[in-house]
Length: 262
Image (cartoon, rainbow, N blue to C red):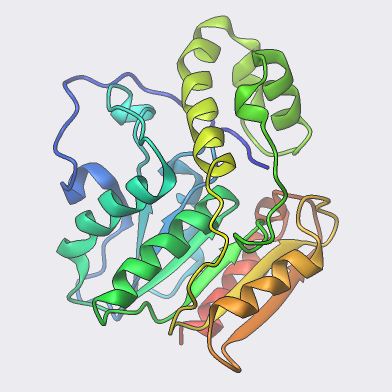
């Protein structure tokens, strides 16, 4: 289950190339000589802006990139991905510009599944990320099956509001609602039709994070990520809060991530 971005800006031109790193990633902080790059994948309806406060809580030698999904903010005119693997293909291709340093991947909710698929593609090239950090979503083969992308607008919006995350007030403004709702529905379609029955394990260690009162992320589902890495390569950590525990527990979460990327 997901939430929405807080800001939408109209795109000023035609959709750019599918593998242009400047299109696909917002660099929240550039490091002159980065030791590592942390690539962050937003939730459904979310945007790269969601991670703008993170660099202040990370070491200066970690460069933070946030993925810009199509169909929102400055990519408003870009067509939505037809499915989640295709989205991962495009992001993976755009990452070629950043492979001169080790990568770690962090994804929240839908972003966890996208990050996992990108990690698979990197792994297949012998470029396994140093860590896959997943948050707020059960492992792909244990995730609950839902069909909110096929429901009416009010049902979809009500489900999003129940998550308690930032930004749902945009649905109160008819003009903003018209802009952001298509991206939200498209993202729900991606994640709700993504159903790998036998997902492949990674060589990367996997860390799973969740809010301890998030009903959409039961511990068993989060611990199932252990099946997608090697023996001893998994850890699970919960923080106080619901689906968007990241807001109230941001400093504690970033401290934990920093320790694991040391």
